[in-house]
Image (cartoon, rainbow, N blue to C red; front, side):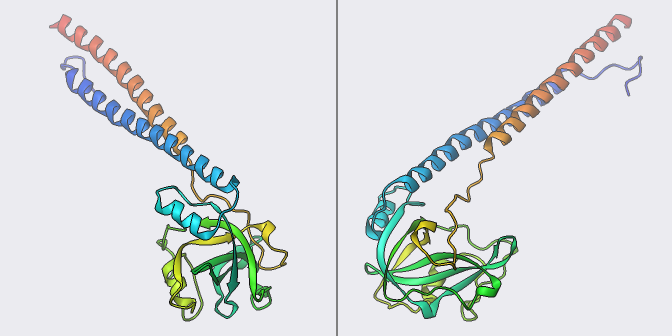
Amino acid sequence: MIRPHERPPRIWPIVIATIAGLAILVTLGAWQVKRLAWKEALLAQLAANAAAPPVDLSTAYNMDRAGSNAEFVRVRFTGTYKNNAWMKMLSSYQRGQGWTILTPASAEGWAVIVDRGKLPGQRLENFDQPQGPQDIEGVLRAHSFGQGYFDPANDPKGNMWYWWDLPAMIAASGLPADLKPYPFVVQLLPSSTAAEFPRPDEPKSDLANNHLGYAITWFGLALTLLGVSGFYLFDLRRRRADWAARG
């Protein structure tokens, strides 16, 4: 609290601090606007990939190698499942405990991990396992997030998977070593199978797009700082003028 006989604080340190704070907040807001534009372009690209006609595995692979984002590219190919090497990943099914079923497949010279969909826990040992060559259609998923902070370690020998580790899954598949490991998971489309279980999910992006909200927050804080500082500086200037007049 400033007493009437005391000299009020100088104005310039408050001005410098305000300018510095505004610069930081506006920079953060502008960065989020750039991130918003990047994220919207990425989501638009993923949507375009999903809407395009399906291609074979090698074409999709070459798209990725050429620098095009191949996530959600639709693929269609003939492959043979290695049903005795299916894998289970802890998941949920209709708000209860469930599993995601992953089955290795050999196709077009590739070793592919196919996400065939989900099933409830009680159906784990009783689900469709198609034999022989199959027409497989799905979308490519990178699943590049890795192990989460609270995720347990995967247990390939015990067939317990908690997070996506594609190289380890291919290594555990037992597929012939001369097959090239495919660098994406193929997630089946719901329309591509008539099996009751496992049941494929409709593919959707895991990418959150909260950048507009973050930008509004940073710009809002900048306006708040400007308003509070402006009011304080106006009052401080008045008090300094009163103090000088009394002096």
